[in-house]
Every structure is written in structure tokens, then in C-alpha cells.
Amino acid sequence: MIRIMQELGLRARRPRKWKTATISTPWEGNVSRLSGGSPRAMGEAAKRWLNAAEDWGRNTERQTRIVGLSVVGDWFVAERNLLGQPTKWGLPVHVAVTDVETDDDVARVYELSMITTGPQKNGNFLGPWVGEVWEIYRNRVR
Image 1: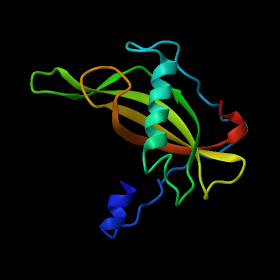
Image 2: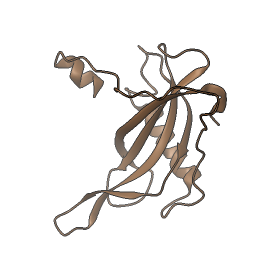
Image 3: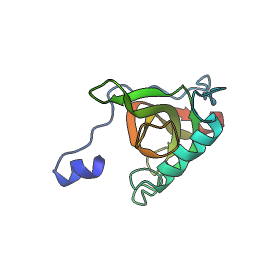
Image 4: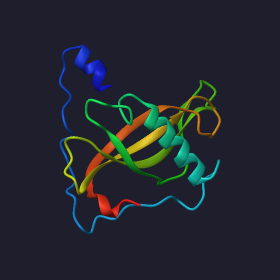
């Protein structure tokens, strides 16, 4: 997305509302169960996808590094066909990232929904929808 905006000559803006990193900000761990797959396996699949993506783990210009990921909710319907049947699913995750802009002891957390490529609840992801963004102390990420 950022690359497309740059090609169009647009500047990406930071989100308006940044939560502040504090010692009391907790890192939310994996949920205990999912309606499809295990939270650990789906989290690993999401992390693999993000690590392979140019705007995330492979961003050499910003030296992006994923330091943590947790599945924070159950699957939800992301897209339906005309008959109302699910065609894509979303998996809510939090991903903690460091790059050249973050301080040594801080990570930026993105609230993502990892969207599947088809109607199965599995780790075949098309990409993420991005929600809230905030910062957290790195030692809080597990």
C-alpha cells in the first residue's frame, strides 16, 4: 500500500491516534481456541506470510523486523458471495515490529486482520487489513 502511494506521488501519513508505550501496556497472548485450526499454527502461518511480504518482514529500506505475533480473536467472515456464503475469512492478530524509526526499547504494534485467499479457515493468507497502531515496550512482547 505504501509503495502504491509513493508511485502515485502521495505521502503516507501516520495514524492520527497513537497510543503511548507505558510499562502497564500488556501484550495480549494467543486466544485459547479457534473455530478452525490452532492459534499457534495460525499465528505461525501469519508470521511466515508477514516475514515474506515486502512491506513487512522483507522491507530492507526500513530494516523491519517482526518481534512478536499473537492471535487475539476468532475467525470472522471478511467477504461473502451473493448467496451470503463466506468466501474469505479474517483472523485478528497483533504483530509487534521494530524498524529504523523505533527506539531500541520500543516496538510498534499493528492490529491486523489476516485475510484468507478462499473460503477455508486456514493459513493461506492473501494479506492483512490494518487497524489500530500503537507502541509498546519490547520487553512486554512475548
